[in-house]
Image: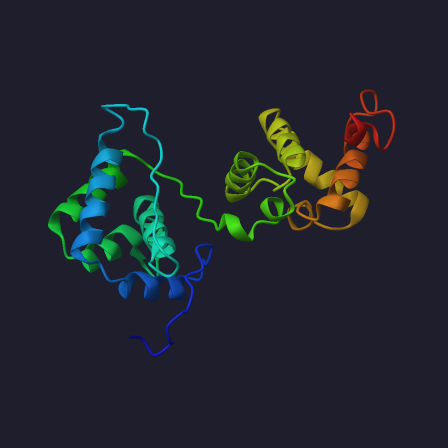
Length: 217
């Protein structure tokens, strides 16, 4: 056990590298857990050459049984970004002490580049309030992990501008109008929607004739 203490609850969206390092290095890979990881990684690794309809896994268990840790370790290992200077898959493979798992992860990391979006749906405001579906929340978090706005209308605008090569121009116009950076402000959705609309009026007045034309469209 590290000197930093033991977290009572694993936070799946924790991104601090030292915390992640400790979580991987202290994760206990039992024979049962090792078997489940092997089964999952074998199915994942064969998918490009042998596509199948199974696109998800269900991790069940009582409270405190390690469901979040299991899912988080899986996401970290297949995405394989660096954790405290060492690839996450390499850290996890060493912790598992299993040559087969090590080979499976190495193959997946080389042949199936993976982008993992790790989140706790129970803490999401959209789920708690009931105004968003799980699919919408997952898609929004995926877009946010790629650097787009968390609001679907704003991210759609960003993607559209980016495709036309106009996103940088939009960001410059936003900075000129409001004296602040779009990247810092775009997740303040209540304000960002109307502000984006004003910027679109500046950039394309023939299409957006009023300051609220875009947001009302």
